[in-house]
Length: 137
Image 1 (cartoon, rainbow, N blue to C red):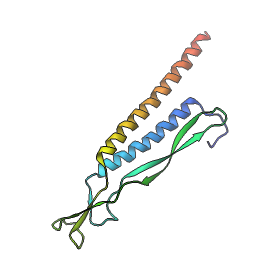
Image 2 (image 1 turned 135 degrees about the vertical axis):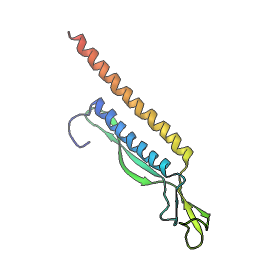
Image 3 (image 1 turned 90 degrees about the vertical axis):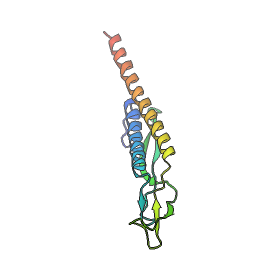
Image 4 (image 1 turned 180 degrees about the horizontal axis):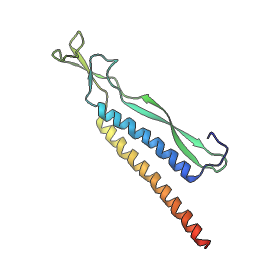
């Protein structure tokens, strides 16, 4: 962590939620480009995925996750012979995006669940803090 102050449960959950938003954005991008075609293998869309790194807080013993970068993670585009396609290369081939839609939908559901779990953590922590403050009255 960049600062020396101990992490709070809200920071842990908030950073995890931010990482899941990056994951959801990459999934949305992949799904939006599924079925896309290009005139060369280099120009064809390849799936992207976030890279996560665990961050430990020595002061509290808490850990969280950060999305540190987004990388290309898909397979090679599928070459298909379609000489009538206006973007076909000189040999009549087009290249279809390498996106596994089923995998992307599963990732989207897992991401939504993980995000919601962190929302629940924040709500529970807030409730516990408020209940503790009420005890002092």
